[in-house]
Length: 140
Image (cartoon, rainbow, N blue to C red; front, side):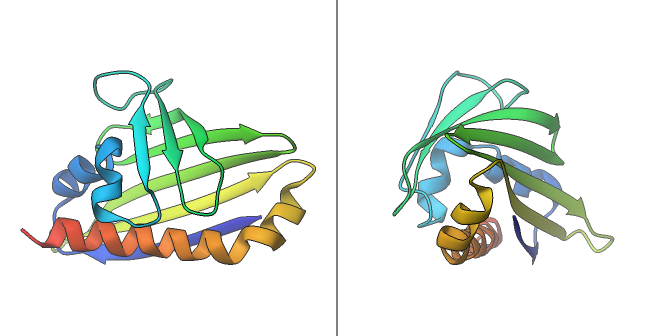
């Protein structure tokens, strides 16, 4: 199961990355995350972890598996029967704006069931994250 959304932000990729990579501050700009704690100090890097608490979902531990500095990161969270992969991609646009592409992929034996049960919620949360990131980055 895959859920995705995107948005364009009137801010350069450096500004957007600074907000997106500061995971502990996500609850300040998206209501889809009520608590975010990094497992280690320092910048986001492959192997880094974060525990996210989201309304209507169990707290989840995410581990960064791929990172292209100031452009993209992918992280995964495993739970019984489902592996969830979160993708965050920043695409610089010619006019100095940034396109943000967010996606959630679920795999594993229970992914179809979880997708049917929580698909609407996951779509709403992705949209909330994209819109919140845009508002935070554009507010100056």
